[in-house]
Image (tube, rainbow, N blue to C red; front, side):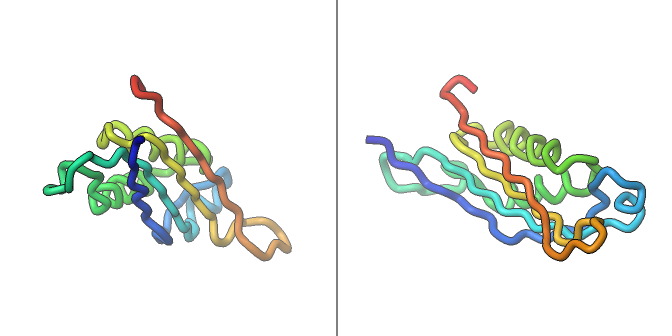
Length: 124
């Protein structure tokens, strides 16, 4: 039987110029990000951060990627997932939800979000 950990980063807030429209690039928008990472748990007790995923490092990676403009949230979510997997090869599953808190849609009240899920095979 395989044991796993789910490491979650919840309600991360960023202000960034993501979106298709020129006004979004100029004015920016507030975003909320939720990330869930599934990693295989070792058979014995963890004794160092190198044996798991350092969530402070995950936050830094996401923050750095949010600083670079992206027109589509779907592309940004895929880029975040790829960067996390490249940095932490032990990740087996990733779920990333990006919410645009104030989308520029006339007469719209609410938010919009994109969720990207990726399951990695042993060789990925």
